Image (cartoon, rainbow, N blue to C red; front, top):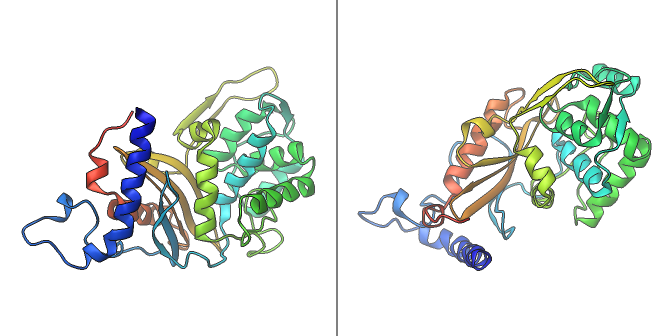
Length: 304
């Protein structure tokens, strides 16, 4: 019965998405926007990102977009694909020794880190938390080195996965999204990042990691103690947020791939280059887009 309800809600959402623009053009006298089953305005207001997209997550139907097919650098949203390749490879309990090069690499580019030490040993699962929550470039490098094997081998797997998922306007030249070898060598589009996000969030392990606010890694025989906190402020501040990943470089600006649920509705979207350096701007864009996109008639329906 629950599966039937989910399908029914997805169908209703699709119908409302198709007819919403027509209905929205003519406001209903005496009825507030909060009472309507679709947004009154044709697009969200105040969105700073020059490229963005929003879709109904269950169906993949796009609700709104801005330059959805424009290729742009995506910074650490890249790590979503890194996680996908690792998860599809399996063996998440395999021990991985953090190479010196992983720490040096993150430092050389001024990338965010998980505070890993050369020579410490963590499982692939633990390194996924280290990569996704604090956006550890050191963890991404260590995972790529182990699962490639080697960086070139892993990048080949990332790009092969992008092709398999139907992402022809996406290319990866670095497992973290750092500007290696240059600012624009790793890129994607809003539409294709939503596709990637939907694929990743269908994996329950990824979903658990992407939705975690904090992860405590106790000290062990071969590793230090770590506390990794998410860079995704939506998980703390936006009701129903379930992920996914922040990103920021000089060329990409601040970016956010996001998902949230309200009642029977689930939205997924992305904003690229909301601000040169303010992650709060990307979060603000995401909040405005989702506030506009959530349909009150579906958001009010509980679903188990």
